[in-house]
Image 1 (cartoon, rainbow, N blue to C red):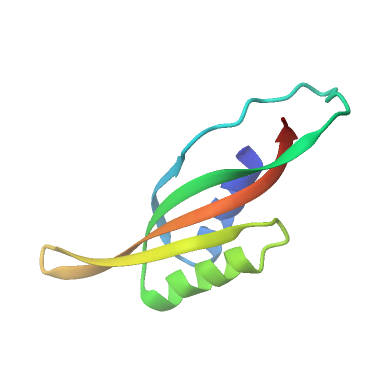
Image 2 (image 1 turned 60 degrees about the vertical axis):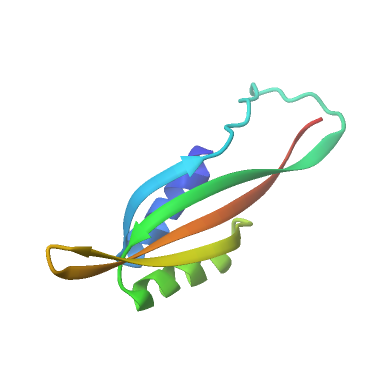
Length: 104
C-alpha cells in the first residue's frame, strides 16, 4: 500500500499537479515476513485520487499511471471546474485499481 501511494505521489509531482485527497476503500491486512505457501487470489486495491491542475498536466499524470511498471489500472477520470475568487480551477477525480495477489 505504501509503495503504491508513494508511486502515485511521485507521478503527480513529476506531472506538476496537486493531490488534494487520496483515499483507499479498504486497506489489506499486512502479512508477516514469512508468507505461507498456499492458494492466492487476485484482489484489487482501489484508490480514489482528487487532483488539481491544468488539463495537459492531468493528462500527463494519467499517462504516467498507465505506463507505470507497477500494474495500475485507471478505471475512470471525472473532470470538474470550480471557481474560486474569480479564478477557475480544473479538478479531477481518478479511480485507480492496483491488482495484487493475496491469501484467499
